[in-house]
Amino acid sequence: MSKASIKKVPPSPLERRRGLALVLSSPSGAGKTTITRRLLDIDPELRISVSATTRPKRPGEVEGVHYFFVDEPQFRRMIAKGELLEYAEVFGNLYGTPKAPVDAMLGQGLDVVADVDWQGTQQLRQSFRDDMVSIFVLPPSIDELERRLRARAQDGEEVVQSRMALAESEISHWPEYDYVIVNDDLDETLDTVSSILKVERLKRLRRLGLTDFVRDLRRGG
Image (cartoon, rainbow, N blue to C red; front, side):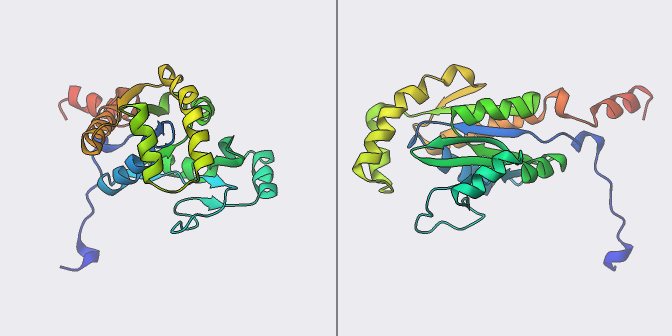
């Protein structure tokens, strides 16, 4: 049978839904970036929100995959044009979430994950409101947080100490999030985040085809 003769089955009304923005925040070293990458490997409906940043590219990082690397004047122009959903300065570098690709993915019914700090989360909530789910990731202990920062060997001693000093302030914002989890075991954490996604996707307000389905059901269809 040729491909042209195969009749494409339309999606069930129950499969139509609005995409959601999944936001992960944590102090540096608690695991939000690792969780994000693992989620993308196991969830076919999830896409990454690639941030723009003015910080230098690290070894192994790829343009457009890990970040969009731009200089400060270009970043400032993006702000002025309203092209960023959120932005913040962290340790002397600017980070922000480009608006156009996120809107496009959500419009297709896909979910978008972003790992941003608490300031970025507040800005994103203004844009997405009911279409955003926020999770704050805590380390099992402060000692473990420092161990992870040193183990990844990405920053010098001064930056590590700066990140540790900032951690207490970042952790203080945990009550602002929908969910709070402790990343003690990565596999368990991934199971928990996946369960949160499953439940949030089933919420009535996101299921665009549910009204039509129930209407047809009541008519005996």
